[in-house]
Length: 104
Image (tube, rainbow, N blue to C red; front, top):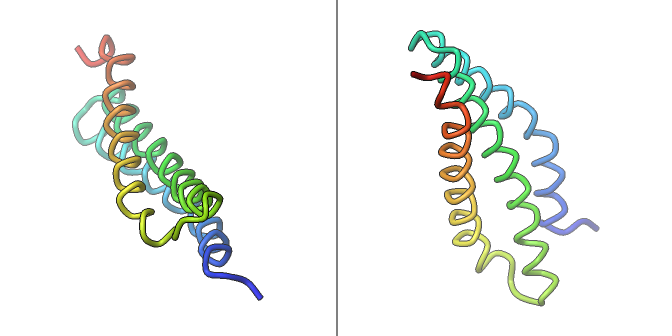
């Protein structure tokens, strides 16, 4: 019998690919609309990386909590939200810093 954690992991693996494509499409449309390909690459790349990072954190945090014999449902929400916010903010600013010479 499968537990809830393995079922959630299976669903994440099935649904994850569509979100990455959506992130790339949002970046391309935003870049075309703003008239800047570099801006589209920054936004799309950051969205894509955040989705991948959030998916990895969403799998690793509950597994880590389960490994130390803590309830994954109790601590995952706060840790996952924090990890996703930190990853997203860092990647957006990092990619923008690397590509700023193409924006101006």
